[in-house]
Image 1 (cartoon, helix red, strand yellow):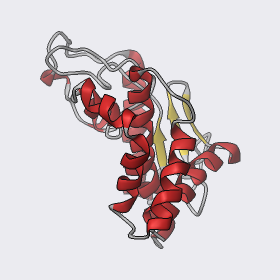
Image 2 (cartoon, rainbow, N blue to C red):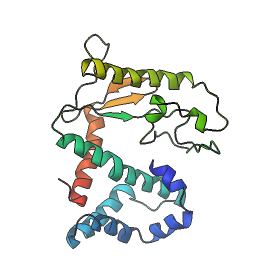
Image 3 (cartoon, one colour):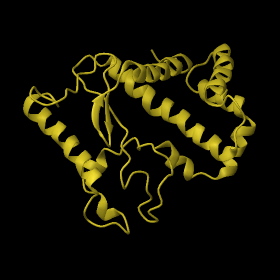
Image 4 (cartoon, rainbow, N blue to C red):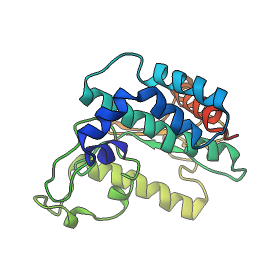
Length: 212
Protein backbone atom coordinates (compact mmCIF):
# COMPACT_ATOMS: atom_id res chain seq x y z
CA UNK A 1 0.00 0.00 0.00
CA UNK A 2 1.24 3.47 -0.81
CA UNK A 3 1.05 4.81 2.73
CA UNK A 4 3.09 1.92 4.11
CA UNK A 5 5.81 2.77 1.61
CA UNK A 6 5.51 6.46 2.48
CA UNK A 7 5.83 5.68 6.18
CA UNK A 8 9.15 3.95 5.50
CA UNK A 9 10.67 7.05 3.88
CA UNK A 10 12.14 10.01 5.80
CA UNK A 11 10.04 13.15 5.92
CA UNK A 12 12.82 15.31 4.41
CA UNK A 13 12.37 13.24 1.23
CA UNK A 14 8.79 14.48 0.91
CA UNK A 15 9.75 17.96 2.02
CA UNK A 16 12.11 18.18 -0.94
CA UNK A 17 9.39 16.95 -3.32
CA UNK A 18 6.94 19.54 -2.01
CA UNK A 19 9.46 22.31 -2.69
CA UNK A 20 9.96 21.14 -6.30
CA UNK A 21 6.54 19.62 -6.91
CA UNK A 22 5.91 20.75 -10.48
CA UNK A 23 9.25 19.45 -11.71
CA UNK A 24 8.76 16.18 -9.83
CA UNK A 25 5.38 15.61 -11.48
CA UNK A 26 6.76 16.49 -14.91
CA UNK A 27 9.58 13.98 -14.42
CA UNK A 28 7.07 11.35 -13.32
CA UNK A 29 5.13 11.76 -16.55
CA UNK A 30 8.35 12.01 -18.56
CA UNK A 31 9.29 8.50 -17.44
CA UNK A 32 6.39 7.23 -19.55
CA UNK A 33 5.88 9.65 -22.42
CA UNK A 34 8.49 11.74 -24.23
CA UNK A 35 6.52 14.80 -25.27
CA UNK A 36 7.58 18.02 -23.56
CA UNK A 37 4.22 19.65 -24.19
CA UNK A 38 2.44 16.75 -22.45
CA UNK A 39 4.82 16.70 -19.49
CA UNK A 40 4.44 20.44 -18.98
CA UNK A 41 0.65 20.38 -19.17
CA UNK A 42 0.54 17.13 -17.21
CA UNK A 43 2.62 18.45 -14.34
CA UNK A 44 0.30 21.42 -13.95
CA UNK A 45 -2.81 19.24 -14.26
CA UNK A 46 -1.67 16.68 -11.69
CA UNK A 47 -0.75 19.46 -9.31
CA UNK A 48 -4.23 20.92 -9.71
CA UNK A 49 -5.91 17.53 -9.22
CA UNK A 50 -3.95 16.21 -6.24
CA UNK A 51 -2.33 19.30 -4.70
CA UNK A 52 -4.62 22.27 -5.45
CA UNK A 53 -3.35 24.14 -2.40
CA UNK A 54 -0.30 24.21 -0.18
CA UNK A 55 -0.57 21.55 2.52
CA UNK A 56 1.13 20.75 5.83
CA UNK A 57 3.79 18.10 5.27
CA UNK A 58 1.86 15.23 6.87
CA UNK A 59 -1.18 15.92 4.69
CA UNK A 60 1.05 16.33 1.64
CA UNK A 61 2.40 12.82 2.26
CA UNK A 62 -1.17 11.46 2.43
CA UNK A 63 -2.08 13.12 -0.87
CA UNK A 64 1.13 11.85 -2.46
CA UNK A 65 0.17 8.34 -1.35
CA UNK A 66 -3.29 8.75 -2.90
CA UNK A 67 -1.75 9.87 -6.17
CA UNK A 68 0.49 6.82 -6.33
CA UNK A 69 -2.44 4.58 -5.40
CA UNK A 70 -4.34 5.96 -8.38
CA UNK A 71 -1.38 5.72 -10.76
CA UNK A 72 0.02 2.40 -9.57
CA UNK A 73 -3.05 0.36 -8.65
CA UNK A 74 -6.44 1.71 -9.70
CA UNK A 75 -5.39 2.89 -13.16
CA UNK A 76 -3.59 -0.27 -14.36
CA UNK A 77 -6.14 -2.61 -12.75
CA UNK A 78 -9.12 -1.08 -14.54
CA UNK A 79 -7.24 -0.50 -17.80
CA UNK A 80 -6.21 -4.16 -17.95
CA UNK A 81 -9.73 -5.30 -17.07
CA UNK A 82 -11.09 -3.21 -19.93
CA UNK A 83 -8.57 -4.72 -22.35
CA UNK A 84 -8.93 -8.34 -21.24
CA UNK A 85 -11.48 -10.04 -23.48
CA UNK A 86 -12.27 -13.09 -21.36
CA UNK A 87 -14.78 -13.27 -18.50
CA UNK A 88 -13.62 -11.41 -15.41
CA UNK A 89 -14.95 -10.05 -12.14
CA UNK A 90 -13.63 -6.93 -10.47
CA UNK A 91 -13.78 -6.07 -6.79
CA UNK A 92 -12.44 -3.34 -4.56
CA UNK A 93 -11.48 -4.13 -0.99
CA UNK A 94 -12.79 -1.38 1.29
CA UNK A 95 -12.77 -3.35 4.52
CA UNK A 96 -9.90 -2.52 6.85
CA UNK A 97 -9.44 -5.35 9.30
CA UNK A 98 -7.41 -5.99 12.41
CA UNK A 99 -4.14 -6.68 10.58
CA UNK A 100 -4.55 -4.26 7.70
CA UNK A 101 -1.70 -1.80 7.44
CA UNK A 102 -0.03 -3.07 10.61
CA UNK A 103 3.64 -3.59 11.18
CA UNK A 104 4.08 -7.27 12.18
CA UNK A 105 6.64 -6.37 14.86
CA UNK A 106 5.38 -3.15 16.43
CA UNK A 107 1.71 -3.82 15.54
CA UNK A 108 1.43 -0.12 14.76
CA UNK A 109 -1.32 0.53 12.21
CA UNK A 110 -1.46 3.20 9.52
CA UNK A 111 -4.07 5.70 10.73
CA UNK A 112 -6.35 5.80 7.73
CA UNK A 113 -9.55 4.04 6.70
CA UNK A 114 -8.15 2.55 3.50
CA UNK A 115 -7.50 -1.15 2.95
CA UNK A 116 -4.14 -2.20 1.53
CA UNK A 117 -3.82 -3.27 -2.11
CA UNK A 118 -3.12 -6.90 -1.11
CA UNK A 119 -5.26 -7.17 2.02
CA UNK A 120 -7.30 -9.99 0.48
CA UNK A 121 -4.49 -12.39 1.38
CA UNK A 122 -5.23 -11.79 5.09
CA UNK A 123 -8.67 -13.36 4.63
CA UNK A 124 -7.63 -16.30 2.43
CA UNK A 125 -4.60 -17.42 4.44
CA UNK A 126 -3.58 -17.41 8.11
CA UNK A 127 -1.05 -14.63 8.64
CA UNK A 128 -1.78 -14.14 12.32
CA UNK A 129 1.23 -16.13 13.50
CA UNK A 130 3.49 -13.54 11.83
CA UNK A 131 2.22 -10.75 14.08
CA UNK A 132 3.30 -10.21 17.65
CA UNK A 133 0.70 -9.39 20.30
CA UNK A 134 -2.11 -11.02 18.35
CA UNK A 135 -3.98 -14.19 19.25
CA UNK A 136 -4.82 -17.10 16.93
CA UNK A 137 -8.51 -16.19 16.59
CA UNK A 138 -9.62 -13.45 14.20
CA UNK A 139 -12.23 -10.84 15.02
CA UNK A 140 -15.88 -11.62 14.13
CA UNK A 141 -15.73 -8.92 11.44
CA UNK A 142 -12.57 -10.38 9.87
CA UNK A 143 -14.11 -13.85 10.01
CA UNK A 144 -17.25 -12.72 8.19
CA UNK A 145 -15.23 -11.11 5.38
CA UNK A 146 -13.01 -14.19 5.14
CA UNK A 147 -16.02 -16.51 4.79
CA UNK A 148 -17.47 -14.40 1.98
CA UNK A 149 -14.22 -14.16 0.00
CA UNK A 150 -13.53 -17.88 0.29
CA UNK A 151 -17.11 -18.64 -0.73
CA UNK A 152 -16.64 -16.63 -3.93
CA UNK A 153 -13.63 -18.77 -4.84
CA UNK A 154 -15.41 -22.03 -4.03
CA UNK A 155 -18.42 -20.99 -6.11
CA UNK A 156 -16.17 -20.05 -9.01
CA UNK A 157 -14.40 -23.41 -8.83
CA UNK A 158 -17.72 -25.30 -8.91
CA UNK A 159 -19.91 -23.07 -11.07
CA UNK A 160 -17.52 -20.73 -12.95
CA UNK A 161 -19.40 -17.92 -11.22
CA UNK A 162 -18.63 -16.37 -7.80
CA UNK A 163 -22.35 -15.76 -7.19
CA UNK A 164 -24.38 -18.44 -8.99
CA UNK A 165 -28.20 -18.25 -9.15
CA UNK A 166 -29.91 -18.60 -5.79
CA UNK A 167 -27.77 -16.19 -3.80
CA UNK A 168 -29.37 -12.98 -2.43
CA UNK A 169 -27.10 -10.77 -4.58
CA UNK A 170 -25.08 -11.00 -7.78
CA UNK A 171 -21.45 -10.14 -8.44
CA UNK A 172 -21.88 -9.29 -12.10
CA UNK A 173 -19.10 -9.88 -14.61
CA UNK A 174 -17.03 -6.82 -15.42
CA UNK A 175 -17.97 -5.58 -18.86
CA UNK A 176 -17.13 -1.92 -18.37
CA UNK A 177 -18.29 -0.58 -15.01
CA UNK A 178 -19.22 -3.45 -12.66
CA UNK A 179 -17.19 -3.36 -9.42
CA UNK A 180 -18.05 -5.27 -6.25
CA UNK A 181 -17.39 -3.19 -3.14
CA UNK A 182 -16.24 -5.39 -0.24
CA UNK A 183 -17.13 -3.64 3.01
CA UNK A 184 -17.67 -4.36 6.69
CA UNK A 185 -21.43 -4.18 6.17
CA UNK A 186 -21.44 -6.61 3.24
CA UNK A 187 -20.61 -6.71 -0.45
CA UNK A 188 -22.54 -4.90 -3.18
CA UNK A 189 -22.08 -3.57 -6.70
CA UNK A 190 -20.92 0.03 -6.98
CA UNK A 191 -23.27 2.58 -8.50
CA UNK A 192 -22.48 4.70 -11.55
CA UNK A 193 -21.23 7.69 -9.57
CA UNK A 194 -18.74 5.49 -7.72
CA UNK A 195 -17.37 3.96 -10.90
CA UNK A 196 -17.32 7.40 -12.51
CA UNK A 197 -14.65 8.44 -10.01
CA UNK A 198 -12.56 5.40 -10.95
CA UNK A 199 -13.08 6.13 -14.65
CA UNK A 200 -11.75 9.65 -14.12
CA UNK A 201 -8.57 8.14 -12.68
CA UNK A 202 -8.17 5.93 -15.75
CA UNK A 203 -8.76 8.79 -18.17
CA UNK A 204 -6.30 11.04 -16.36
CA UNK A 205 -3.42 8.60 -16.21
CA UNK A 206 -4.06 7.08 -19.65
CA UNK A 207 -3.40 10.49 -21.17
CA UNK A 208 -0.38 11.41 -19.07
CA UNK A 209 1.26 7.97 -19.26
CA UNK A 210 0.37 7.43 -22.91
CA UNK A 211 -1.23 4.03 -22.24
CA UNK A 212 -4.18 3.21 -24.46
